[in-house]
Image (cartoon, rainbow, N blue to C red; front, side, top):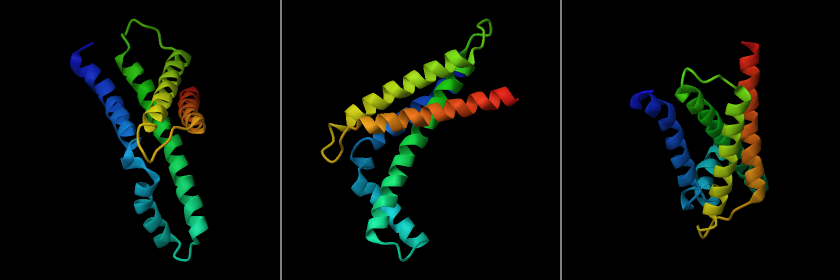
Amino acid sequence: MTARKKLIAWLPLGLWMALLFGVSTEIGAPRRTSRIVAPLLRWLVPDISTAALDRSHLIVRKAGHALGYAILAALVWRARRLSRPESESVSWSRDAGFAFGLAVIFAVSDEWHQTFSPSRHGSFSDVLLDAAGAGSALLAIGLRQKWQ
């Protein structure tokens, strides 16, 4: 496999991991994301209550966890597929297991990383949410492959 093919296979994953790492700092703190989410929600629902706005912001943040790690797992799966030697047999379960494992390890490290930011904290429930997002993406990939 050429270096160019490896780069094409793994670069999107590396960039996505860097983005996730970046938003686990102060940049992704609730007080910062509310500057984007709150005005958008107020524009969509002008008479939204403060309590509903706070709940909606939390839901958007948690959905972002699941989506972020769904994308991460899909990118890991893709990178494994694209960088596999042609002589190696294809195994969805092996690739999915690798992708899921890497996504969960990254989720744990990401939550640990958040403990170093003053306005952030690590959360085991977020790791579970991240794992659910990763698992959902891999399940969708598996079902799509089965239907093709």
